[in-house]
Image (cartoon, rainbow, N blue to C red; front, side, top):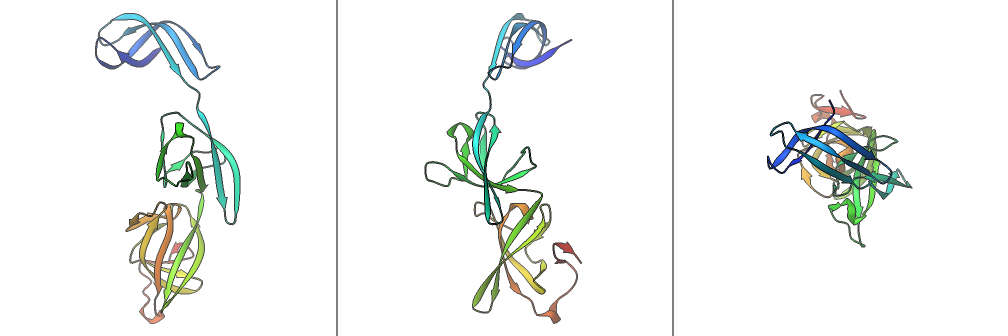
Length: 208
């Protein structure tokens, strides 16, 4: 027995319906015409469903210093947010920015046709802002996308131990913990080697 979930006017909510006869098409989106019976109240009548095809939005995937132009299929009415991950034919991607009418909003509806800026989510290059006295050093290091970072953890960067002071996500939000693919910047400071404890530390993205 073929069933579909649709809104029932008699029940006033979505319910499972038994399909008695139907005609479908997927040439321009998806359409359904047929006769159904509500399995909750047994009301029988004709129904029609039309779903528009997904949108093709412009996609900019950053890879180190390069940016690859492409597109991504997204359903209409979907809210796209900076910091979220989305499926892509080449693998999971992380949305790092949105461009709409010359602005950089934190979120946008798909039908507004924003340009999506993203990076691949299998690995992530995390930017560290390391305080060294009165100067700040900027360093990038690659980690697995699901590598976890917490404020207070120690991380070895280019052979020197540092302690995490702050974590910023893409979009600017400040958090206490995040995964590598979510992080825009980690602020930290050098730690004297004699004060280094192996507990809670990382070396090249791995706990020691």
